[in-house]
Image (cartoon, rainbow, N blue to C red; front, side):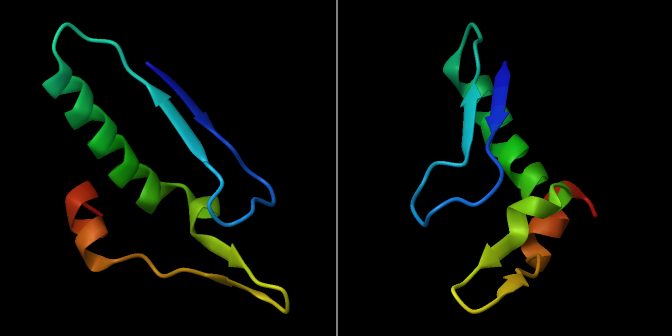
Length: 71
């Protein structure tokens, strides 16, 4: 697999992550990608910051996301 995660100032709607996965069957690839995104939502803090014209704020983690990752 290959993961590329952009950082810095991005405009709304811009792609932030690219995940490339190779496997013999597609279901394990889809499952891995889904679990990886869930993990990133909890563990990678820069994923959660939103910048506005006047200020910025950190987005709170959802309890449902924490339960998926086991935090």
